[in-house]
Amino acid sequence: MRVVRCKYIRTMPRHPSLIPLSHDHHHGLALALRCRKQALGRLKPLGIQGLKERAQELKEFFRASLAPHFAAEESALFPFMRASIPESENLIQELLAEHEQLRGWVGLLEDEKHPAKLLFEAADLLERHIRREERELFPLFEAHAASSGAESVGKEIAKMIKHEHP
Image (cartoon, rainbow, N blue to C red):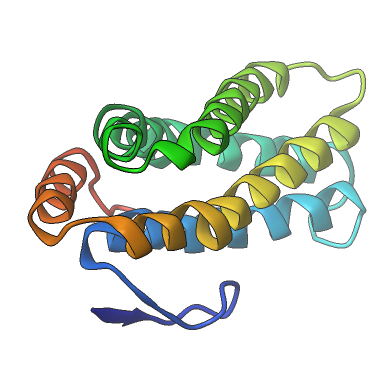
């Protein structure tokens, strides 16, 4: 196993199959922090201009990283875990619901009536979702995944995720 180091996620050994997902999580947590700071008026440019810039950054991150990330989880990781780790079902259902919520938030970011509130809430959900995957889902995968099956999942994930983060 390789150790993933990130100032936003505690250092832990991570199964090689999950490293591309953890890499995305690192960038997602950093963006969530910037979005919350922007929404609270602690990041320049201040005001509506800064909120628009951060909302655009979040939408672009979703398009470039989260959409393929969610697809990799939904088509490779979650089916594998459902089949080999039955106790993961409830957690997976909750994470899928969060995927849908996050997809919805991205569409709502166009609403300029309450841009700070929307940006803060979207960032908050993104952070909670990432931390839940890192602290609950991934350890469950690592504790129960058979090597050959896990490696196959890792290959599928790697095909779907490309790392071109800003």
